[in-house]
Amino acid sequence: MAHRFDPAMAGRLMSEERYGRLDPVKFLKGAGLAPGDSMVDLGCGPGFFALAASAVVGPEGRVWALDVEPEMLGHLRRQGPPPNVFPLVCPESELPLRGGCADFVLLAFVIHEAAEPLRLLREVRRVMKPGAALCILDWEKVDEDEGPPLEERMAAAEAEALAGRAGLSVTERTAPDGSWYAVRAVRPLAAP
Image (cartoon, rainbow, N blue to C red; front, side, top):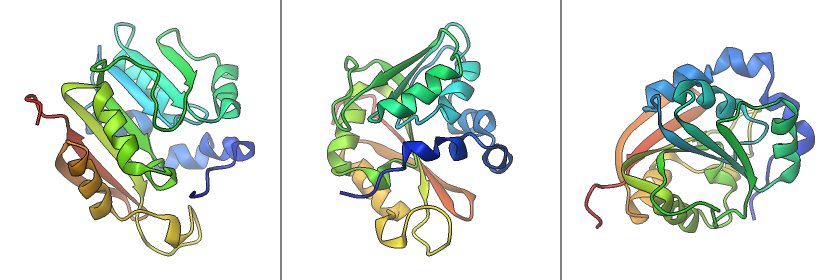
């Protein structure tokens, strides 16, 4: 299995440097998250995106903040998340949510850590409403000092192919940073 981010390093995920490099509210709005949406932040860590998503979806929306690491969710809970954020521990590929509940799913820096990425994406598709969006934000497959080792990274083209095999339609790929890519996909309105 690929390495997982060490929960003892959770502070790095909420650092001023990270906020300076990636504005989570701007990113989420640009990826299609809207007021009133129900969002799943899968692999939420200490809440970098979940807390921002709470503000974007507003009081009528909800954010399920899911992580396999109870310690990561402990960091999130200590920040006092708003009432529309629901932190839940879950196995990697068994989301504790009913099918068709999400308007938007975010996998931020998670797909390269998945033991079975196709199984994970099929489970993500299950919780997506028809027409819902998925955004995969992850490390470019380049050798650099920060982030996971090169051999543990997943190329954007591979993430796109896996999304397609999971029954999702890829609509866009962007590069918000030289180190990262963002793949956007949707669950088709008609079941394939």
